[in-house]
Image 1: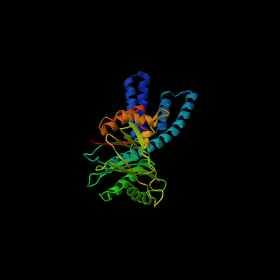
Image 2: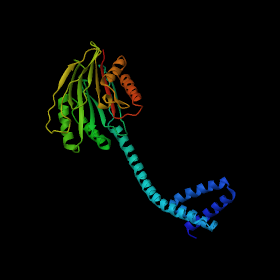
Image 3: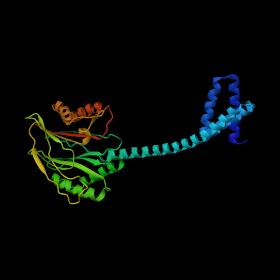
Image 4: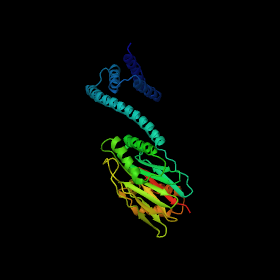
Length: 336
């Protein structure tokens, strides 16, 4: 007896017992039959056909309309079975892709990990949270032999795995630069050549690079089309926008960047961010820039790492705990 014939015989016995007794234990056995059918790759239309053949044996004078309805159901189940098989194939591929993305995300976390330098002259806080598994934002700290601190903050135009590996390339390019004092314009010009030569067409990178001189408390900076940051001026209790212009990395091979500098007074601090902070949304409403700055101001008395944590938590709540874009915020406070 073939496997299908054996299954048909078993199903017929179950059906006959149930029709006679209405015993719910038989329904449980029918559930087991369904699970067994899935393991044997028996399609839904075959199960319906088994039921139909069993009904013909049990009720020989079955009404013609009922017979026709079974024929209709069998044809319907054939289409359903094909569609379900396609769904299962797509689901398996989706699970495989998710597993690969999980691996890539873990690799990214390892590759892009940047330690905040310990520096007696500065209090630094930084937080970067991806909206999805892969982060299109990036920050990186460099400390030279004189304890001056360089900070890069970047955002790839384009998300997902390509953006993540683009950031990895930028990080390792930066780490190949000499550790002695390098000014922001030079850093951006070197990275621009790396991106222009190695990143696929249509993918660009915005970046802000700053160098904090801990000896004279001057901040040198340059921008490649990045979201403007701010400096909190304690004597005025107001934020001053960091004005810096420059073309995105990877657009023009021989791009020259302009460098700026500004003094940082006591109790002043620097705010660097990506557009995922300034373009937060509450429902259909974009959160105003002043709301972001007010949130930072209200936490200004705290250590830098607590400021970034509190600001992130506040705007995470406003967005219903679902980020719409990668969130990256860096605070650099001058210590007394």
